[in-house]
Amino acid sequence: MAVYFDHNATTPLCPSAREAWLDANNARWHNPSSLYRSAGEANIALNDARGVLADYLGCEAEQILFNSGATEGNHSLMAWAAERWPEGKIAISGIEHPSVREPAQRYFPAERRLELPVDEEGRVRLDALDGILGGGGVRFVSVMAACNETGVLQPWKEIAARCHAQGIVLHTDATQWIGKLPVGGLASDCDYVTGSAHKFGGPKGCGFLKIASENDAYAGQNGGPQEFRRRAGTQNVPAVLAMLAALEWADGESRRCAERIGLERDQFEREVCKVVPGTRIVGGKAPRLWNTTLLAMPDFEHVRWLTRLDRLGFQVSTGSACSSGDAGPSHTLQAMGVDFPTMKRVLRVSAGWQTRGEDWEALGEAFAATFADMASPKGRLSGQGIAADPRRL
Image (cartoon, rainbow, N blue to C red):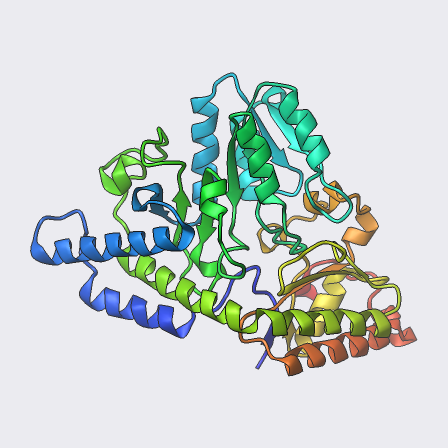
């Protein structure tokens, strides 16, 4: 069996989520907006789940809107903010996920859109943030909680304090944070929070948006009374119940094994840097998610590494799964000052809650064997003239 090291892209459905989903599809499949008893039971289950998620995040149930995931939440939030503040400016970090970056570009013209610079480790520069906020006109700021590519954690508490001191709204895409790290203060410090179930063992196509307050003017999708008239469409009750089961599971597993896996990840990094001299850990000097490492290899393009590791039974990534089909440079790495040739040699390794120490050790050995093979005269010859498309390798 292949050893999966791409959990930042998506996670397998955990057993408790699968069980909750199957049970709900048997007993709670009705439309929760209908009026008969079975539909009412589905509605009760949906709102019970809303209350559980609100308690977990530390907010009111009326602030939780269920949707199809963080991409929908981010997109609808950008569209609403552009309409809500028609003359206001938005500031987003240079490392934001495309689901924030692209709708910001779509709904805010260039003169109303500012970019928050990051340092060489990929953390938002607070001095630059102060300057941008002090310049006037900014009404909305969006900074992710943890970077999907590097795993670097953002100082969202400090960012929130600076924004709120000037009456500016803050959104954080917490897709990679939730289920891996404690959420204390996330919902109270950040006005808007988005998340996706499939990043922590839940089903794809399910997520949430936490809004600023139950009296918030936010409305994202018209066409029905669902989700307090803020997001129309029949709710996917089985997926929501599976998401909550997955979150409970992931939170417990993170408390149990995060420290162990973090130490094993650190040991893996030291081993790779030893067996492949010149390897660099991107963002390695900053606080990071315990499961993530982004390796800048000293030689050979990342697709050659990926395909050879895949043949050895290890599934890793060349970076963000959402942009893996894009041959252009990573805007995240650009913002960090990484040059384009280095970008073409980066590999992301992201473990899961069930990753074992022997999996890390075996992956380190696979890196050593792959490097030795590609560095040999035969290996170098076999890599000449091959297009950067894994389907052709």
